[in-house]
Image 1 (spheres, rainbow, N blue to C red):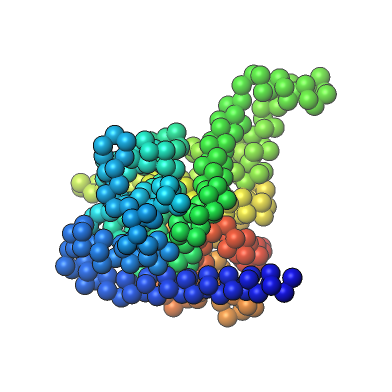
Image 2: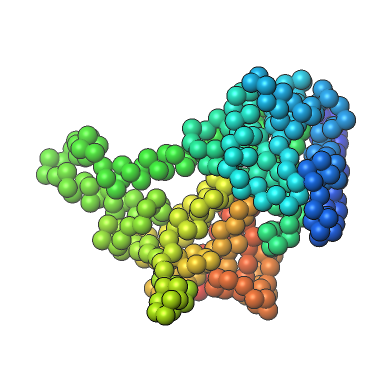
Length: 398
């Protein structure tokens, strides 16, 4: 028993040392970032100066071809920049780009995802050393939509996120994690996230336009012959709204029976004399191009906010953020970034007992959204920790 405890403690100490090594390397890259970008490093220099050291900090021995094979040849004669291996088997392909490459070329995305899919490798990464995009190659959707998560080491793209949070995000494709196989965080989270998204989309279709078979099945299950199909259909819409589920397409209050999800007309300029007209923003505006993990975090925030007062929470969309309102009074705003959510609440940081590590006072900082408490959320566990604060902000608007 004592020996088991000692091994456990030793493992925790080793993990802490490895995490500290990664944190130190991220801080080093961030400190040199401006200069490295100014020199416009090409792909090979980016690999040597940034990607290789970061892979090493994640536990991958770049100098060992049995663990990290560079210029890995796939069965169709193509090659990926890196194949990261466990026991000689590739578990992660990595395609490198130059440091200033924006990584938004669908051809490049399709290339690395195709390499992985053709080789039977589930996970692949596209990176310029600063931004790391992780794709799940086996999903049945266009390559860009296979984006599971994105980690950016650029302070401007990770505002409010601590270096520790960034390290935890990157650790999900560390050697230690990938060695766990189907039990690794990335695999567990990936299956759940993509499945939830597909099931939610299917349920949205069924609930908002239920087929006659479903209506009949539900009507029979009630055991009440007096309930008609149309009543079942209307009931489904009300219940679906009460669950706080965001529809995949804009729907008005007539369907949701009191829960309004509507766009906000935002002025981009005057509509006359050649100026840009006002436009309305919707959910798709905020979710377009976002990784699945961040989209699921946003859906979870939806459920939390709508569950506070089913049928009496209004959500509106502005250009840069989404607002949750109680009787026209906003209690929560969220900016959806590619690697995290930035949530703003109407609370005073100084009045919070034991504020979480991801919270900060922004009362003296210019920011989007409503409220002076900012929460930088990168995981479901952090969102659960933030839930009491969201409720507190909601209750403060009564």
